Length: 67
Image 1 (spheres, one colour):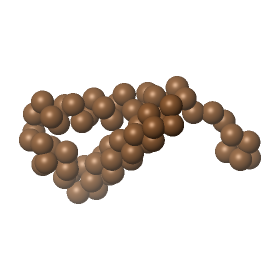
Image 2: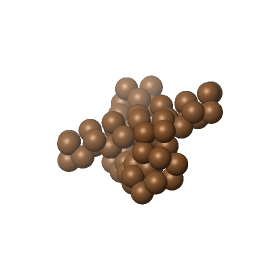
Image 3: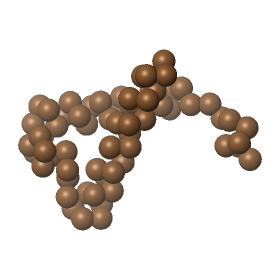
Image 4: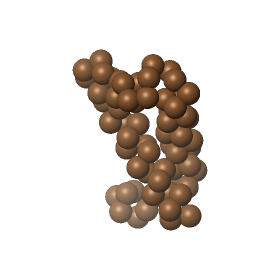
């Protein structure tokens, strides 16, 4: 489970950075690397979305986070 959460965390960070680039500079790094809505780009976008769902379902409210 640790490896799955680590991979999910990394993919969510990549997705967040990509959205930051899109929002600030209008530059889509994933589309630049893999092609505009190519099958590989769609796989990356899909994996980022699934990773976000995994993190949402597995996150726990830690005592430190709630304070």
